[in-house]
Amino acid sequence: MTERLPLRTGIGYDSHRFAPGGPLVLGGVEIAADVHLRGHSDGDAIAHAVTDAVLGAAGLGDIGSMFPDSDPVNAGRDSIEMLILAVGHVEAVGWRVGQVDVVVITETPRIAPHRTAMCERIAGALRCAPGDVGIKGKTNEGMGFVGRGEGLACLATATLYRA
Ligand code: MG
Image (tube, rainbow, N blue to C red; front, side):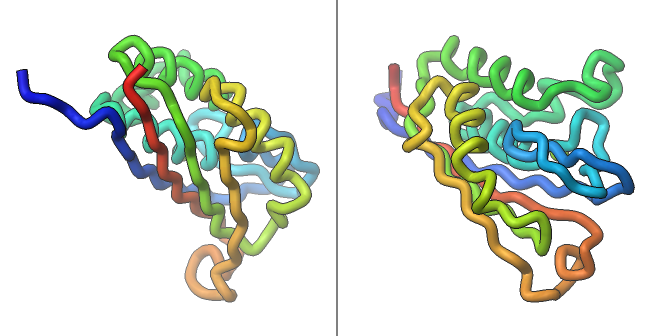
């Protein structure tokens, strides 16, 4: 068998549209807002981007193949629960999550006031420490769909180590 690296990295991306009526669920945290993220699940774009980064690093495909939106069990589903299940698959093939880093691109809400709570929720699902999770908010300087307030986007990277 070919020798493989003891570290792997993955990248994930997700975007969701805003729709009228709060609360907004992001990073596993309920944020008081007059919009929510429209999606087949709860629309938690941070959780979805992190899930794809972790699955990609482990070579296990993506969130859409693991939790198809054609399956009614995934309707309105808690995305943190899906992340926990994905991490279980990753650990089953011999990897542990070492660290993730996330950028949320949105004009609103502001991320900083929710960062600590989000890091704790995501870290709990990843079975790592809150300090191993980075979450940063950036506006899009008024440009494009984010700038027009139509929705938000997230990028995530994940680093796995051999358990
Ligand atoms: Mg999504």
